[in-house]
Image (cartoon, rainbow, N blue to C red):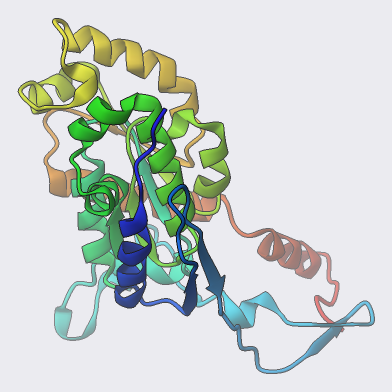
Amino acid sequence: MRYLPLYNLCYLLFILGCHIETNHAFVIQQPTTTSISIISKPQCRLHASGPLYAGGFEWNDPTEAFDQGVENPYKNPALMQGEEGIKIDPARLLSPRLAGVNLYFVGMMGSGKSRIGDKVARRMGTYNFLDTDQIIEKASGMTIPQIFAAEGEEGFRKLESQVLDSVHPYVRCVISTGGGIVCQRENWSKLHTGLTVWLDVLPEIIIKRIENSDRPLLQIDNPLETLRRLLDERQESYGQADVRVSILEDLDEDEVTDLVIRHLHDFIDENPPAWKVAKAKAQAEGLDWVK
């Protein structure tokens, strides 16, 4: 099978690196006719007030670097009241609670991953939005249907995995992924570096949104039956997501965005970092956290 030459991917990701607010240095190796290599070298530095000692070893309290003391605004509405009566968007309070962790939107085609992901990123303010399908199209100079026609689904999935591998080292990103990205087991090693959000939409709702689209997998006589089959095949994989948001037909995009933001705040409450759990336990038992 002939695979697409992705020389443009190097350049595109270099440009993306210029627009994303991260401390990454890119080394782009000269591509050959058969492969490219993109190496991202994170240059993040965490600053603490000074060394502490635990068990005889120098140790930095994670509180200094990560915990900004922001609570769930839905449980403490006073946090959403700013000066002069101006209401603070709870999405703005989500960013410090995530501490730079990426958000990955997964779900079926037509579930709204790109539109909702973009709205979430815009409302958060400090996160950037990326769409893996758009990156593939810009890098290859071809549309998704053209790639399917030239390389088949297998070729497209390989490109999809390569793009995910290239963008996941960034931080503070909301990333919309293709509907089938969860089917490749190796992709989960990247998706699990962030929080995954599954937009769960019934096939009967999806078909109304994309009935006349050029989606490659739906160019058949019974697209609704195909959607049902694909969802059934992928249900278990989608179920690995951290957050599941069930979307009803009468919800508009802003209401879905609100649901996503609230679910993420609740997930953070229900899944605190291990160090925070250990610290709370030690303090509850009257032990010195650091001595």
